[in-house]
Length: 591
Image (cartoon, rainbow, N blue to C red):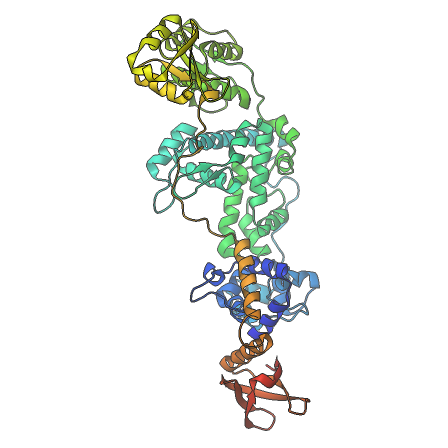
């Protein structure tokens, strides 16, 4: 029989790092790991009681594979099979199963078949292509998978950009609202129903952070947008794969290339895990399809290669990129295929994406040109970029639009001076003549080294704001813009501790508690063991140091611990004994 005291003794003897891993693996409630509160663990006995509670044991059993559960249920099996249970504190290193674990095994509704038919066969294994009645066509499936992967990555990339612009906010109750889902769906070219799932995927792989109500893009997410399509695919899948639970990896390895009935495979591989594993496996199968790894429930050869990080295999199946676009007279831009990230970024400087996809459509407008000019790009640079990307040159209406907007809105350029503190203003002589004599700008104390340049010691962004206020078409260069936050400031609560941090803090607190106190640490420990025996009416063997220095064992059923004394019935001679707690040397369970 294993008692709370026995488990507490094992926990106490564990090295700190091993104990921390056990606490993290057992997924104890936050209230137990907290520094204070009615449920927080104050010593190793509290921790042992928390680990032996029904909920904690059930949660641990849910993550044990079939072989380990068989070893626990039938009390037999190789040491390797029992190792996961030992690591979770459900059994001791000698194979002894905790009584609390045995009770929950007997009561678990999903383990009846395991007790009655331990050697039942698992899911039937398929040979060849798992689709019944269909001829294998890996080339077709690879093409379909790559097309789906490209579509998903396009949606994810547009969502990352929407998040980066501060356009994704959650409701107070959690999740995004239906109107926002529709708006994002129209922007990214996806159904509104899948937007939440794609945002969840971005959060899982670490490309976006839900934060405290306002989503933000991570540095990894911004970096992902600059990588080529094959690396985008392998990087995305690699992060997704790494985020999966080890039990899910185990089920996927068992299932092989056939993902059509992962739930059945999961229930056979983890008989007690249906409560959490069923839904997780359905999500994994859906994600594998969305990421282009599987088609019709079958993992493709490219899917396997992408999981392994083979960018070459990904590049062989993804649609090839194009290096030119078609500039239309109606100011639309048609990309006949995927653009490289660099070309896409260059086009987005002066155009807005209207229809994402394999053949994306962009549109140049007066607003988009003005935005580019105010971001510090010159008219000549914009036209040169469009000419480089165009397969047929720059149409006259487009060139006229850029020239017209530049003449009206971007004719005055404000740059930072050589010292990095002042400003240099470039423009036509006529424009600078007006600025130089404008009474409202007199405080800028202009100097004019030549006809097309004004110089002032005021910061560039201050000068540009003053010119804008007086209706001069002034724009800042990229170098002159002041540093800004990537995301708007948001009031956030203090970040919660990770499971690893909480476990480390708990172990430190328990070690300190063991060493602290007016009583000797060992006496305090022995007192808690006896107190547990009192509550459970458990017989114990108490070894007492006698006045002559010898030690004498007593087998008692303790009834109380008070005033430094232990009272209990001596099971050997059936008398009531009172023993000084200060003379107790050791306590061993006899249950």
